[in-house]
Structures are given as C-alpha cells and as structure tokens.
Length: 109
Length: 114
Image (tube, rainbow over all chains, first blue to last red; front, top):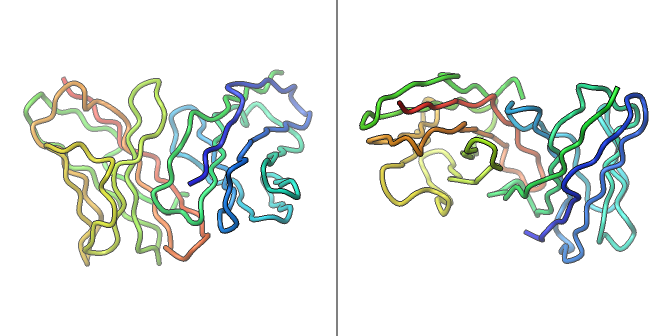
C-alpha cells in the first residue's frame, strides 16, 4: 500500500465545510483512496473511496487530484458528531489495510 | 456497519485465563480482519482470514494468540494466558473480498485483564 500523509489535527466550525487533506504521492495506478473515521473508541466507519474520479455519497465528497498524488475529503456541513479521527488509506483493495495515525478533527460549536 | 457483530462487547479476564472474542461478519461477506487498539493508540492489523483459511497473520503476536474462521459460525480470536498488556479494544471487519470493495467494522470487544 502506498504511504499516506495527513495533518495530525484540524479544527472546523460547526456548520462549515470540513476539508481534510491527504497526500499519497507514491500511489500506484491500481490503488484506491479509502477514507474511514473512528468516533471516540467506536468501531471505524467507512466513509467513501475512489480511484480517480471525484466521488460523493450521503456522508461526504472525495476530491482526487488529476495526478492522484493527493486527495481531499469534504464534509459539507460539519456537526459536532463529526468529531473523530479520520483515516486516509491507499490500497488496491480492502486487504490487510494498514491504518496510519489519521487526522483528529474537532468540530467546534 | 451494524451488520458486523462482535461479542462480547466487554470482557474481563484475570491474568492467565483465556479470552475468546467472536465476530460474525456481514451477510454475504467471506473475508474477516482483526485489529487491536491499545489505549490511546492507533489501529494495528492482526490477521486476515477467509473461510477455513488464514491469509495473512503477519500482525499476530507469535505466542498465545490464534484466530480461526470456520466453515460454519463466527470468526474467533483466542488469547491464551492473558496478561495485562493484552488489555485493548479488538475490532473485527468484514468484506465481500471483491477487489476495491470496502470493509465494515464491528463495535469491538473491550478486553480488560485484571
């Protein structure tokens, strides 16, 4: 799996968009970008994944740069319940996925 | 992720006892992954199993830990002769195993060794 780099922590005002960046400069052509989050010791929750096209679902949007070396997860209207650790993973499949330290997102009232 | 069931949710064992953690994957999923999370630390991969096969156990401690995923029934993570350092949250995930599909996690078993 390609190495990913994320900021250690971020703050976001409630109701504003949260933009979480991820660098994956060594990503291979067959590797997808996956995003998961873990809310305070709960089980990790799948958010979204994509290859090269932007993706959107009911939770978030994923923007992947054209060269695929970086991506941004966007939570359009952050709420207090979005406070969590967010993990960006580059992998060809969900197979022995290794979690990094992630980004600790704090949504502030 | 409500479909991945782990039990028990909390488990207390005395040092030297055995701990058995169970994971029932989502319906239709034949691939199971176990992770351990020590207090205030990240998720560490332990083992990847398919039905009746261990695919990758590179993250499993060499002694006292074992895992299985039988043809019938849940996947079991077994820890023999538990020590205080085994106290952690153990998470199970399952996937359909088809390339590029996502995995879904259970809510974990919190093991406390006293």
